[in-house]
Image 1 (cartoon, rainbow, N blue to C red):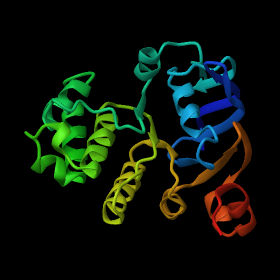
Image 2: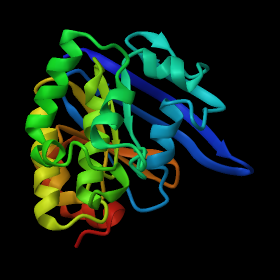
Image 3: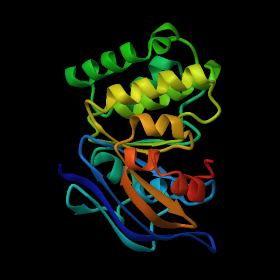
Length: 235
């Protein structure tokens, strides 16, 4: 299976704070790769570094064989990387339809087909098509954010904490959607809900104090009680 994204020993500062101090991982095409670790470990900053929102000061980020760590965010997005931020990043004053239309890079038949597919996956979006994004529930906003990232022909989608603050029944819906999307695109996921990641993840990387400390197949981590307790606080 080919490597789509490769992150090599990146170091990232936010102001005077040295947040990432040697993060490395690979994302293989067609898989769900999960970044795990305690709060504050550097997972979100890793995604933001890939997108150029907090550019790394050292290290390499390679996408489809091309170094992208020095590119501005819009050029990285145009390479075919979608991003679902932790705060969802939707337009509260625009309707669901307008949020989707604004996200479109091209208005062609393929994009319309992708939109129809993702709306079928999230029936709530169809029901509230003319409703303002700010009036949606937390779960519906998350669905809209994921749908916007999927809408364009992105070969890789970065998703940050999709289950955060959601009721268990909504988490199940989001988990199901990611499983369905996995058939059509590659996903890099940051998620604290281990039950969710253990079911949909293929490979994991654990980040601790700004550095990658462990990686492997997700099913091996499910069985490794010591590793889960040490780095994830799961007893």
